[in-house]
Image 1 (cartoon, rainbow over the protein chains, first blue to last red):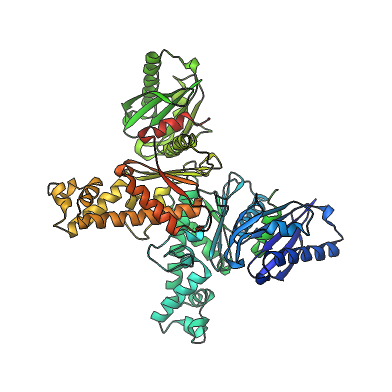
Image 2 (cartoon, rainbow over the protein chains, first blue to last red):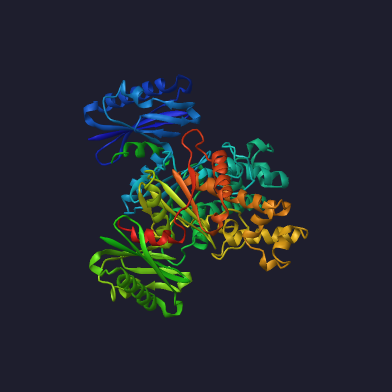
Length: 315
Length: 315
């Protein structure tokens, strides 16, 4: 049997077909019609599924179930999206709407949890581990955790919200209302803030030249590029960034003691230095230095982790 | 059948007999002979068991198993204490030593995990929950977590080390070598530090009078007593203490989303204000405000939580 994974994001709705060898065979996506609400999302997902079926010569009888990742907290028992800020959902009956088109079991899950599950199964093809933690450094900082081989959800079904672990008490104001959340320092958004702050203190930094003199052109890539050319201020940006990332990861290791931490998201595309710095921080800072040490690896599925994970929800 | 729980601490070794109604029937303890190592601890535990047997008219045939809590990380499969700082143990064969005296299955577990398990089962007598987190505010900050009804250990068998979650980057130097760990702010030790710091800035504070003018007499109780009499500096101490406790607990809630957080340890004996302040911080600060909120309750088993939990290891 084959599986369908749906990644219902704030900007795109994507559907993927996973075959018996656990590989993504085909993926299709559409812009998410946020205003259309849950009804439009269900309709569009069904349309993408029909397109894939037509192209692959399949029907619903070839599929075991449909898994759906949603950027928010879900109640799979009731088939509801309890809350999804980006989609403007509050107690939205996503499963009932999808069931109008899809004659199969439909499972709902938080999208960061789906991504963690996708990366977990990908990693397990190489090595068998039970305790696995994923961190996504994107617009925010997302996280998901596998404990004893099972997806960990907490009693609100969206744990762990790693991005909202406090990192700097009284620090940068986060969208959640608190000050100093991890995602204000280690996301692309946080890195951009740090780069702009330090650029403003260093008007001779190469970052300005790379940004055409405009602060709004300085983003998370700018300090990496400038530092690679020897710019001192850019190196200061990266030092700060790696320091905060290291402190946060040591906390994650001390709390969850995962065997593997995998790091994904746009910021992780900056190469091995990020993985190396993260590993160094954990080697030096984790509490149980005397026994086995958590290893840090780069995530491997990119944007498709969520689709894989949704398709693997009952694997 | 009855159960035996052993709490093998750095200062005391205690043994308790738990009956069929899950109640502690008798408890005996001895000073721990740290220099004698694992051999003496095993011998003393067996001696305490013999005393209880004699008093209760029991033999090993009335007992199902013996659970042992150790202040460190253990490998129960191998029967080893991997590392216990307070007991000076490194890969110590505790089970083999105990098996010389005890003809029953012997299970080893981290002591903070045992305490969490003890409190969990006590709480479950009133209300059925699956996700439970215990914080002990004692000399340090200890923690333990029950996830989906099972003790959570991480791949190093001592997770979660909540006391070593970072709270103030670059803050107070912790015994673990890092700066700004949670336990440097919310333990009795941390509270004492804060009280002394603020007393030194406020020579007219009532804390000095209560301490007979000697800074070494100011401890974690002093600011509570002085604040209850209206002392402003003492109130400042408590405000700082509750602020840090709140920030840390919000991180715990966002990461673990437990249904219940129970707070124990000496500092929690200061009354309802601590529980109330913790609940307030979580109500205001946790990420999933829109759905169910974690409740904070006071731990109920005191020093005996570890014995109960050890006896319940295979319950």
